Length: 112
Figure (cartoon, helix red, strand yellow):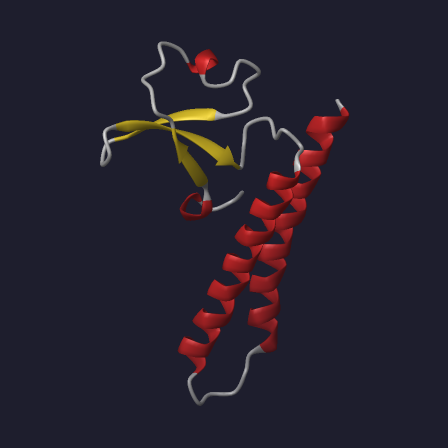
């Protein structure tokens, strides 16, 4: 559910022979970056979140960015026109749904 533009990628300094070399437990997803001609691992949202503090910080940043985008979009679209609270609430609910779904997914992976 997290939009692709908000995924956090981390470059790896070697060309792995297999994805298991990056993370044997399947925690991180391996991706090829054509622009940089290098491999990246997607650390947020991870396939199997490791459940450390970094996950919470990355989720917080993601939600902050999503809320900022909603706010900037509304300021830009409205200009001098009156607020449409129902439309704004719908977009905020979408951001909260993404955040709560990711939080539940992170916790449920740790509980299994």
